Length: 403
Ligand SMILES: C[S@@+](CC[C@H](N)C(=O)[O-])C[C@H]1O[C@@H](n2cnc3c(N)ncnc32)[C@H](O)[C@@H]1O
Image (cartoon, rainbow, N blue to C red; front, side):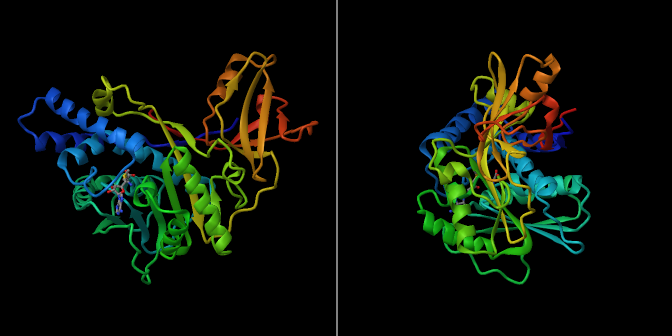
């Protein structure tokens, strides 16, 4: 196996900034009292995200406690999720920044800026020199003000960048694009809220308006929480958009512009990533009595662009891992979607494996993109026997590097 793509950890200075904001807001509270107030709010927000799924401008963007609880708990999580999706655009899908001049990003449903600010930070970390501007649109004026404040306070993380905020209800039509279109448009965990009850047809009409704001080489990165409805909608919308306009191409999660087979076959499975993340110390403190999942983020995503999709040879030789890696008595196996958009089951005999080889295969995560060499065609073309662990190389396996 070859190298993973290592991503910088969530910056300590951001963790400190969020906690300071909370202590400045309630200077008379003891740490315990503040943690408990945040915990109560997190339980409510977590239920809203995972159970009731009903959102309006007052859901969590209008009260200080809601914004500061989101910032101290969920912000680092969606930041890390966007790091995975953006790194895929950058390292695997050949998104290119403009050669010169400013790089322009639009963050729709930005909230306090986890997705947009993560992008500014990462693009600088990866050595991009362009001046950067981030436009953030959201219906929560308080979240937007917090984002501006955070951007200004931690300028060292994203030098030579500007943030412009606009308060807007995005469930309405978008304004027509002006001459200055965007290199990246982000919809980080926002599409499912903005269009919580809309039919596919109105969602895709709205997404067409979003795509008009994209430069010819620009990428639209959409991420939504893992769940049958939100993930199926995401893949259905992406497919419908590419079918309706030959200039729009689907770059991810699969290959050669092909749609999600789970959506096409109306399968009980749905496309989503399951990635390891690192909870900050503040997240761990808040979470200690709550026992929420903080070491994993699960999300569905899709990338659309007018740029050409790079062509890959069709077949099981390249795949995206879409299942857990299963260790059984005699075998290790996993399911992958090949570069021809078909589902394959890959299997390796365990008897010849050394301990560290087994460990390296179990270290694979859902969403990793693999290249498999030396495939021997068998009776069932959807079952792929791997000759050895060395047959697997990593084309894209992002991991957060906590040192
Ligand atoms: C789960 S948060 C995600 C925030 C941010 N993108 C992130 O990655 O952390 C969803 C955001 O969508 C915004 N939102 C939901 N419905 C909206 C609407 N109709 N118009 C504008 N913003 C909306 C909310 O205010 C919230 O900031």
